[in-house]
Amino acid sequence: MPNARRRPRAARGRPAGRVATRQNILRTAIQMFAQHGYAGARIEKISHAAGSTDRMIYYYFGSKENLFIAVIETIYEELGHAESALELAGLDPAMSLRAIVRFTWEHYRAHPEMLALLNNENLMQGRHVARSKRVKELSFPLLSILSGVLARGVRENVFRRGITARDTYIAICSIGYFYLSNKHTLSAFLGTNLMTPAALERWPAVMEQVILRFVSLDGPAAWARS
Figure (cartoon, rainbow, N blue to C red):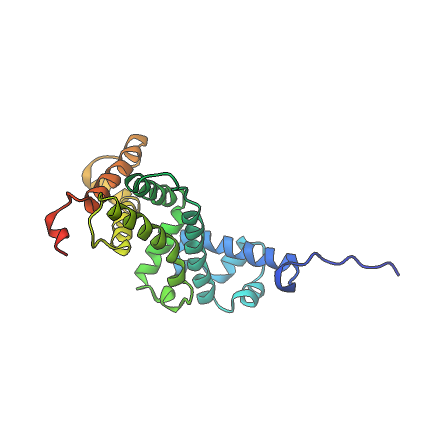
């Protein structure tokens, strides 16, 4: 009897095919949850789109809720990996901060599914994120990078003291996230198309100016007293 070929094996002794199957389900779930929301993305829809079965989804993730938690963790993890790859060496503090602002804007633009998923999770009052054991850890990369940039700016006497990486990060995210998440309603309300190439080119420059004014030594006196 001829020897049967062994299947290639992945990390921790699992067959490589199983890793690929789990990853395929996860990638499909990201798109389905983004398009249809948590309620609309039923397990049978996800398994059909992934070319898999309901049984395999339950095998890998245990429940729809656990699958959605894995989806949220994945989008944050991918954001963290991209943030960690930022090349800031040789840039002064102001240019480093500009690079972080631009990165955040471009990541949001390149990943509309992330915005859709976070919008949906916020409508559910963050109940899945609250169950995640990993999400808090995944915020570390950019907060660490921002802390270093702000500290350098203080040492070089270009940024004010007392500004935290957390506040700066929230400010950066808010300005970019709000623009893209509300592009349709804002365009209608303001009577202008916010998604033209010219508008999309202009907005990150506005973001940079706002954030740099926030951290600079000649920023608002009210913030300096905080």
